[in-house]
Amino acid sequence: MKHGLKVGIAILLFAVPVQAQEQMSHMDMDKDAKIESAMSAAPLSIAQDATIRDWPANPGEEMPLLKEGSNEFTCLPNMPDTPGNDPMCLDEPWMQWAEAWMNKEDVNITQIGFGYMLQGGTPESNTDPYAEGPTEDNEWMTDPVPHLMIIVPDPEMLEGLPETPDSGGPWVMWRDTPYVHIMAPMPKHNPTTMTQ
View (cartoon, rainbow, N blue to C red):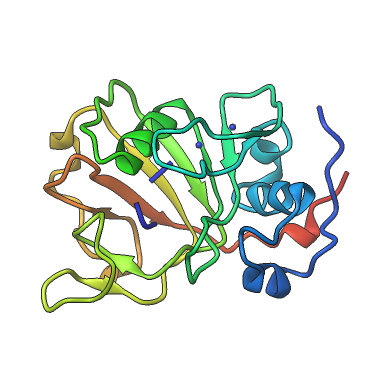
């Protein structure tokens, strides 16, 4: 994730094939397509009742509301100007995290938080939250895996966990930064299988 973190209604069936959606620019997406993109980030049990917001046009601006929800998750569509498919559904601690990350501010995590990115993400560094490309030492990941993200209030809780994705299981990403979190690989979510 380049940056994690969130989020009844009738479920919207995908009108745009997933591959075509991945190639569609953020600005070209209409409201329904953004909602569909956002909902593809998490399991139906989370996404169907989540609040759906869009990314702000400028840092510091409020995220535009696309759909009101009733659970604690907020889902966001594919990020603008990214080469990958990286919608996400974040709970409240992760939304606080995301706001701090977007504005390059410190973040104060007081409880465990969960975020879903089940479409994968965008190529990114495992060590630098703001890297724009690979360097000799930033552990660039070219093929991000679909994942669940976990943040904890005390970084000491992460001690002993793997620090790279090499083992194929969970690992600690963006270590030694305010945005450190656990990445837990998950199966890719196929939103076309969502049912009403």
